[in-house]
Amino acid sequence: MWRLLAGFVLLLCAADAAPVDGRTVPDFGKMYHVDGELSLPHSEVKEPFEVWYDLEGNRSRIDYHNSTVRTFLIGNDLDYGAIYMITPVTTETEIQAIKYFQLNGTKEDPIRPQAALPDLQGFEFEKMEDYAGVQCEVWKKVAQAGHKKNTYRLWVKRPEENDSPAIPYHFEMVGYNTLLGSHNDRYMIDYSNFSSQIESDVFTPPGGMTYEEFTDPAEEHQILANPLQDYVSTSPVGHAHRLFGPFKEKFQRQYESEKEHEERENYFLHSLRSVHSTNRAGLTFSVGINHFADWSKAELARMTGGVIKKQ
View 1: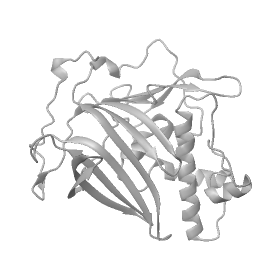
View 2 (view 1 turned 120 degrees about the horizontal axis):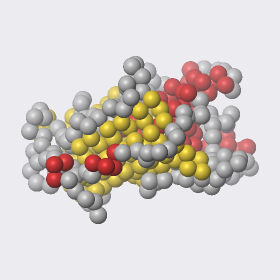
View 3 (view 1 turned 180 degrees about the horizontal axis):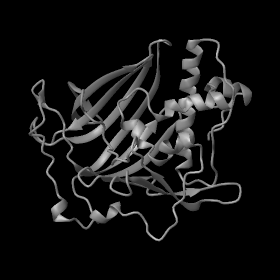
């Protein structure tokens, strides 16, 4: 269905990558297209997305929910790049009104193309494993910040030999909190239709429109404009974690212990992810963060008589 441009066809060559345990670290190339589905088990959310990535062109595009929401990250626009977002917005006076938003980069935080796959620096080959009937290499990285210890794994297929180009198959993060002594976070991404062939015009945002600034709190702009960044990053602390401070200040939260603080931050993180994913689905209603965002499911269930209404 795509009109392929021959000059844009790149081979996914990993020849320059250093071998690890006799295996070549996966190299997915500087240009690719891939479909994905993000799964958030805690919130029972599944969110499809599609990514076009062009590192040398300093641009990428990410669509969510079958292009219900479209985001263009153009690093060469303006002085420090810009993100253009086209999304339906539902308010008290409008239902699914198409809005055009723009977030400009700055000298301190320029806009860069957003990859759909994690940067594999620091990943090590763990094992071969059959995943959903497919024999895959499993590459693993463990990262820790404070009490947050995250384990990242990427499953990749090799069509032929061990050093042949890799195809991404599945990515998973499992979070462990050393203070709580429990696994408290998890999300997965399933990949499909990976290709190094891209149409050049997919990176062009709609013209002739008036793009406005995001109206939500400034702290949320990065997540609204580029939600995928936190999921493929291998840092235990992302943009979502940084929003917990403003939440505490707004609702005057004070917790009795460091342990409770960690618990409440984790509940808030899950609530924030669920809210943003729901609003990207183009529904006839919208949801937002309120003073219950740091409550557990059990606490919410008690308040609603044992029934948790799905957002």
